Image: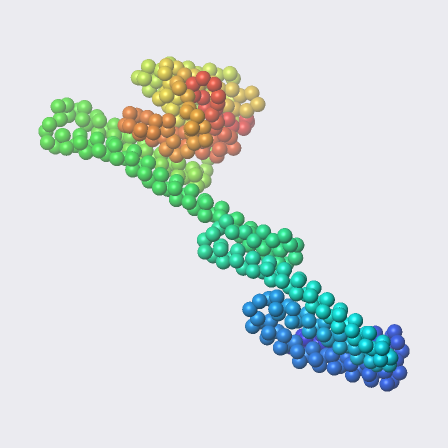
Length: 392
């Protein structure tokens, strides 16, 4: 009320100053104007609290806006009527003035009703959108074509709904990935554990025909389990960015040569010819241990899927790259978008045949991207993967 009183007093003073500067009134006219303006201020001071109370208790915004605007129009009509009467118009002119004012008032009220109805409908649409979002309908949008405060509010609510929808999709994707991770880990753990339990029971019962072979099988299963657990933890750390790469100048040709020598016995046991083709130095900045692991994963994957030959090409022109290509059947078309996902393998039977747990390419992909490079599938015969790093 204090602010309203101050505004009314200011309006009263401005009105009197305007009359004084433009009309040069007499003392009697000053008294008339002061009485009219003072009466208007008093009416506004008395009716405004009532209008505010009505607006807060009204169930529809349209009704409150219409009543407030109509009151303002009636006050204006009353002022004009009083002014017209004070000008000593003839009865005919006074009647014409009042009829014109009444008609204008009706037109103004009709316009106010139409505008308030449209505004009320938009407010209801915003409210319905908020309620739908609260009920879980994250696709609800107000989509108001307005540029005022209500339009900006609706745009903010729509942006909130889009963000909530994206977060829900991300939550569902993470939940699906977590469930798939647990299922795949459980599956890959179950097979060696079952084999180990059978071997231990055979040894305990004394029915194992060759104890050394059974112990060797148990040792192989333990190594498999150890490697699986280490890969899972490493991949988890790579995905959350918990590993800092110790970057130093390195030559990918040297790393590729070391990886080929380390996996040569594996290729020999499988009857696979493993060849290295180096086209010069391929200098880059990277972590020797992690990049070496990535290359070994790529070569080991190629050996397991090759029919008879694996070739490793190293190039350093413009960028440091290593291409590992085998002469096997290549990647199935359905694996083009999931080749670097966790537990992604061409053989979905998951038989215990040494095919790996499907983590090697995922680890290599994260190591490559962590070095500002990439790991991509290449077209052509057989299977081919290219590891690229910025040249140093």
